[in-house]
Amino acid sequence: MITTVNTTDNRDILTLLLVGIPGLEHVYSWIFASFCFLYIISFVGNGILFFIIKTDASLQTPMYDLVAMLALTDLGLSLVTLPTVLGVFGLKSLKLPVPFCLLQMFIIHALSVMESSILLTMAYDRFVAICSSLRYSSLLTRPLICKLGLLSVIRGVAVILPIPLMLHASTLCKSNVLSHAFCLHPDIMRLLCTQLLANNIYSIFAVLSTMGLDALLITLSYVLILRAVCGLNSTSERYKAFHRCACHISVVLLFYIPMISLSMIHRFGNHKNNFIHVPLAYLHFLLPPAINPILYGVKTKRIYECLMHRLCFVQIHKVNKP
Image (cartoon, rainbow, N blue to C red; front, side, top):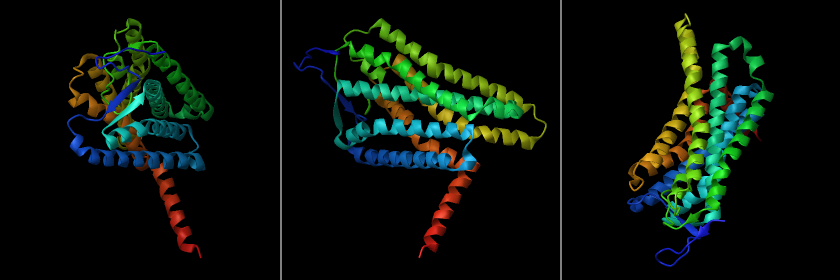
């Protein structure tokens, strides 16, 4: 179990203090309202997206199964960060027992690895659809997608689980104040009395072997896709191929750019300067779950048509109802 020692004010570190954005306390009410708006969009958008994909027969394909998995992952990420984020910006600070903080940290990072795995599978789906379109139905089947989805869950849990277990056996003594409104591994690592080499090495391995490797493979897949698209003779075919990838590329950039930047700042930057890494953390964990369903709902033609059909059906039913 995490060992607690007396700090300078003779209190044991049994709870961790979550804070928002120091210096902006006077606008916390506006930030609170903005985050509430993002959470509403996330829950409603991802819920509708998942419901439409799972109930419409025309969307029962591997590609849309992956979109549904992404929506579920985003829902989970929003659900696990909502209590502490709204608590911090509603109360200006929030105390969280160490075990609960470690649990939240585990779920956040595990879901991030799962989302990275899903984005990699989506990249493979786009690669097969464009580069081997005639073999698409044989290479990508719904049972295979289900297995890959289960594998992403197992991968996320297996890779991240050792991190809270190692922290649970460590000693916190430097401080009890975290930099964000949710618990992140690099943030908790700063509070250790001694930086454990094994913990540092494993955390680097976990990032590089999951999200780092996924980002590299996604980049490689799009290099191959770009080469195949540039080889097409028709301009309209090239535009159509690029359009099929545009939504996924947007989601990938929205996920990986803040994540890589945040990881680099936590690892090599000055952690005392909250001006950059704190907003990046909120950007990385709060914005994609709200933006992803909008991107797929508006930019994906079949999903948009199914959504409009449902809305029109509901409206007609209300009009005709006696």
